[in-house]
Image 1 (spheres, rainbow, N blue to C red):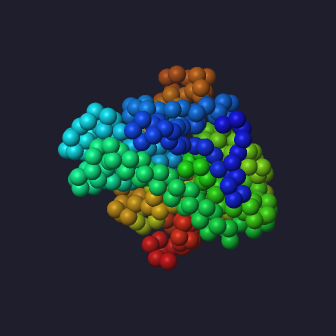
Image 2 (cartoon, rainbow, N blue to C red):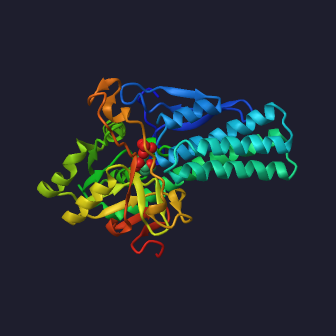
Image 3 (cartoon, protein in one colour):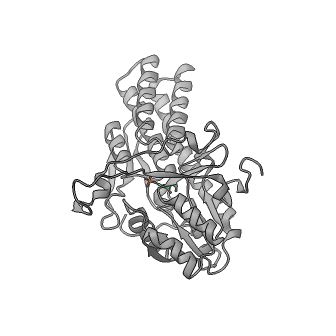
Amino acid sequence: VNGEIERPGGWPVVPTVGWTGSALDGAVRLLDQTLLPEREVQLEIRDLERLAEAIGALRVRGAPAIGIAGAYGVALSAARAARESAGAAAAIRVVEEDASRLASVRPTAVNLAWAVGRVARRVRDALSSGASAADAAVAALDEARAIHAEDLDMSRAMGEAGLALVPDRARIVTHCNTGGLATGGLGTALAVVFAAARAGRRPRVFADETRPLLQGARLTSWELLRAGIEATLLVDGAAAWLMASRGVDVVLVGADRIAANGDTANKIGTYGLAVAAGRHGVPFYVVAPSSTLDPACPSGREIVVEERPADEVRAFRGRAAAPREAAVWNPAFDVTPASLITGWITEAGLVRPPFGTR
Ligand code: MRU
């Protein structure tokens, strides 16, 4: 990565995820986010179990980014089926089993199941209409690349759609990492910040550090510094006090799944931030592409919240943060009820409550 940042059209794009090599002999490329901010290491992953490990360990993370990585993973699977010269039925079975395996690694972000399902369907359609396994592998990579390209387009559109909410010198609170590292390279909530900066509005970001894995501290600060945007890091507990004591103009967060009624799952701590924003009259917006909407999920009650290992809370990078025997509850996400959300920004524009109407 070499610290260089690409700025196509003035947007700071991060090399989060990609594909290298040909459709039949290629690899998923990932920037290992567990090593940031100290080291920028690109991984080349050629087999599904290593990819599942990378998604589970948050080497790649963020709802759209794990969807894109999973989509490239199904392309790996289709290539393996072609190399092993499986017949059409066997190839479909291999690809569908691999797609379900990948989708099960992280249950909350709907983007993962949506993207792997879309690529697996493309493979099944190709093979069922008589394509060779090699052609189906090419089709799988095409589909994964399309998902990736659409994500970049949606990021730019969300950025532009959110611009009206960000006046000059706006004080913006963010949670977790919602930038290029969480997506195909550009962002959700941070895309709005990047759009504001591009428009000369000099946004000021207050980034929650985001315990326990510090996506805000390690990743959001890293991205904002690289993009030259004014940013101040906060411990999570400081956001409500910032609103009370100094003032905040807007809270912008991303989402991992938005239910049909607008209830929104996002990184643990988002719900508390929404409660604080409501208490202080600060507008609270969710910025997410349509790949994060789950119309089949009626409300937040049906969203499965991933629970992660206790050791993520008891220690950080091998250093104790609590007694080894401390009991821990470690939900990775929470659900903010639609009633606390001022609006949702998608690539199609701003949606205000009640969710589902425009
Ligand atoms: O556990 P993570 O780091 O994958 O969680 C990510 C988030 O909660 C983001 O806020 C979310 O994916 C929306 S931003 C693309």
